[in-house]
Amino acid sequence: MYNSFRHACERLLRIPHDPAPPPGDEASTRIFRAAPNYYKYLLLIWALKTALAVFVVVVALVVPVATASLTMVRHGQPWGFLLLMLPLLVLASNVLGCLFNLAVLRLEYEKRWYVVTDRSLRVREGVLTVREMTVNFANIQNISISQGPIQRALGIADLRVETAGGGGGGSHHNQHQPIENLHTAWFRGVNNANEVRELIQQRLRLLKDSGLGDREELPHPSPALPSGASLLLPSPALLAALRQVHAEAGALRHATRLLE
Image (tube, rainbow, N blue to C red; front, top):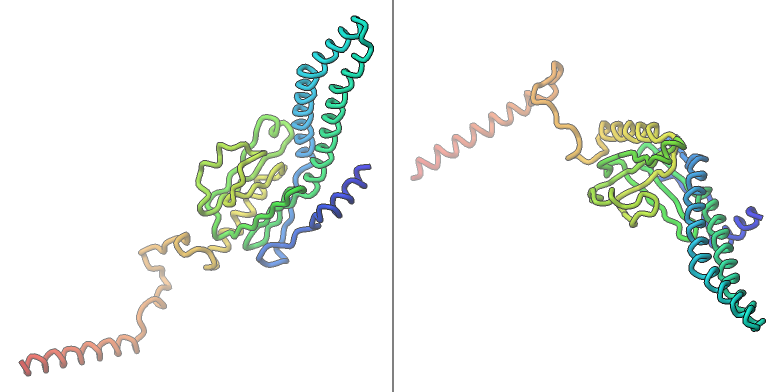
């Protein structure tokens, strides 16, 4: 049944298949996926929300209406049973909605992609609303890992990549339902967050060493010249040209004084 639901959603919602690699060398492409335990984590969150929703419906609607219905029946009003149909319909629709959310949850887990090349990364997530974000390594300012108690128990973590203009205020938002931030990319539910971080940092260093990164972010050269720094000195031809210019400037200054 789920496979039929998945195929129907892919056709109806036109969900794209594998994401195209971001800019960079295709030979360096690495693809990461959310860990299986991340789906268990999502299931736990879904179960807690579902239990809370059903509890609210039962306490706030089913119990009061059922009590009123039985009271009416005891007073000789048989149609009181019809009143009981209303909360049952609401409860049934609530359960169906929760099951639909469960199917969408599984589909969102399967359609989550993290792609890294030697120059950039791309994150795709979502089913009803597909969100795809591409980050150039030259714009990355911070890479951090966050892990809650349940995530530690499941051996997963969230990797956060912040780019220029992202600021630090977004760190106080809920990590799993955050306010959309165009300057922050999330690798959610990975079981190798340290490996992914080291890979991005390594490729970021290589990118800067190659001179393709932002010049203001490149390390400043040491004032001390290395032993083989002769290539940094002016050539003899340049020195001769500079001396000639200096001599001509002196002659021009002398001629100007004679005219005065």
